[in-house]
Image (cartoon, rainbow, N blue to C red; front, side, top):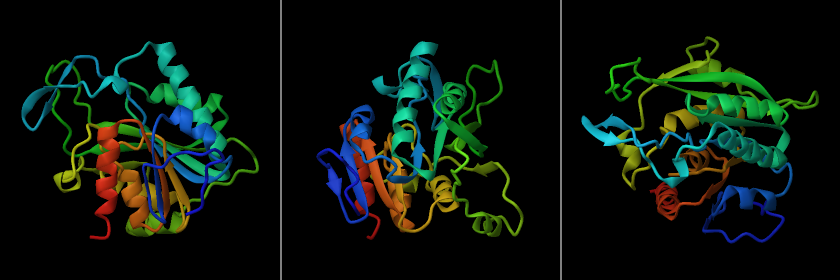
Length: 261
């Protein structure tokens, strides 16, 4: 895998198909070469750690995930989203695309920020969870979905890659719709450790197969437990991951090291 950094960046872990950086994306992304990335998947903070409660494994637990997820004002959240999206746009190739996951807590800001920073939204994917945690307050409907926005640069010359035929084949010969249904992350994918917002591998597999080709470079600026990297490498794509929590970057490395075992 080529070095895609203009300025020296110490790599926490590296293989021929993978480069993992321990640090803040706001500081790392400006050091990357412009227009060097084929696809970006981002699962940014949802800012929902507000001392509330939820249900996990049949037990009442706090929704707090860490200081990185603590609530911000509306203006602060939007400023944060515009900044990292702007930095991602700089490193994305003209024909590349970006996927961003979120909930009602941040996705509306994300959508607006994408348009303000010069992106065009291709699809609004609704991920319907078959086994969401119950709503303990019983004062609203159970939260059972997340939104994943897929976007490209808003330029007439930009033409994103879409593996239409494969998606149709995987959907029994019919056009695949923008509602995807599946379970939360399986326990077997958490053997090396747990992350509070870990995405299931099947979700990333569909995203990566739909919008990249073998040998492409996939970037995740908020890598967390490394699901994007694990799936990208399994599918023959290269991966660059950035994570600023030591616990999670070590978890990511353990997972990636297990791929060929």
